[in-house]
Image (cartoon, rainbow, N blue to C red; front, side, top):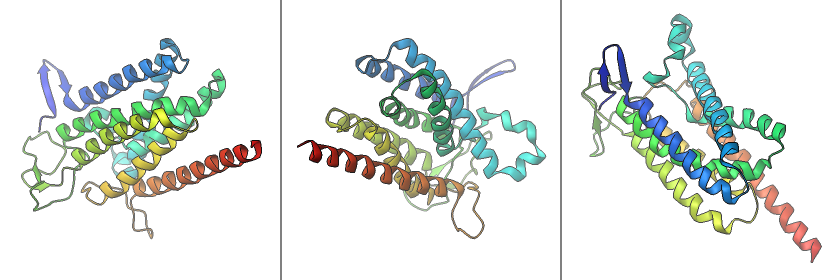
Amino acid sequence: MYPDLFSIGNFTLHTYGLFVAAGFFTGLIITIRIGKAEGFSAQQIMDMGFIIVLSAIIGSRLMYVLMNISYYINSPLDIIKIWQGGLVFSGGIIGVVIIMSWYIKKHNFPFWKTADLWALAAAIGQGIGRIGCLMAGCCYGRPTDSLLGTVFTHPHSLAPLNIPLHPTQIYSSISGFGIFIILMLMRPGRLFHGQIFLWFLILHSTARLFIEKFRGDDRGILQGAGMSVTQLVSILLLAGSVIALITIKSRITKKNGTGS
């Protein structure tokens, strides 16, 4: 594909970084528009956006480094080279949830309402950002003989060259856009705050478990578990989200039943 958009002297604009930035700003614009109707100011959303992108980068990069720790022990300076790819979306979710839980509590924002707001941004951001993964060749798939096979030929590509691979980046991008559409359709009829966020985690984790089967890059297989770190995180997020959704629905049903 096209890992490098253009170069001027020693400066190179990497396509991966461009699409990640485009995904973030698209999500931010959507969140600002929706947030105003939810009682948030544009400044509050931009402040949260800065915290979210920072914690997402740290969390997603940290998980990628841990999954490839043997390499980074010998090349520690490469840890900061995020423009070359190497961000694990599930790690970013964990980082955001941890940091934003602290931030929300500090500023007395309603947790579930805020989480719903940013779930939409996360979905559309992934849809756009994964196009950058395709351009860079990171997060590539296994070799395939199917018509879907994508061949990378650029010498700077992070994917193996000149063999057809599953376009797992496209699978992830489509899932991101699809989840965004589903959440937008679900939003007007939501029954409680937190429903959108929990469904985002459920849909994302389910899609990720499916797509992981076609990934060809090193996934950090867990000894004795027969699964990658990302698959384990996705299972935990999926299980936790389903339990939380059922629990909250049960409480609402019981409350309404008591009230009647």
